[in-house]
Image (cartoon, rainbow, N blue to C red):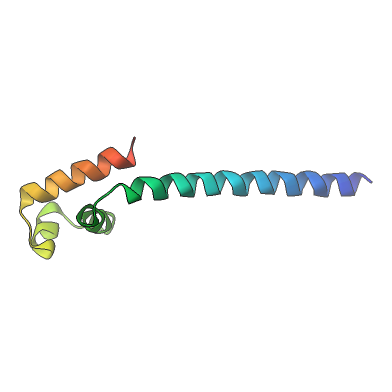
Length: 79
């Protein structure tokens, strides 16, 4: 009987962990959806390790525009 109870508790704990993960994923997805397509492009390049200068060149936009998009990505990421 104790083993069954332990298994039930383990299953409940695992379910709780999975629900928390799903809530976090949903929250992140909602924030990403607030970004414009260009801001998402900048975000992808940011996490890939590109510098502002590299992003500007790759996206054919100004350095200042990259900075503005990065600011917005950070604002949305850390709200």
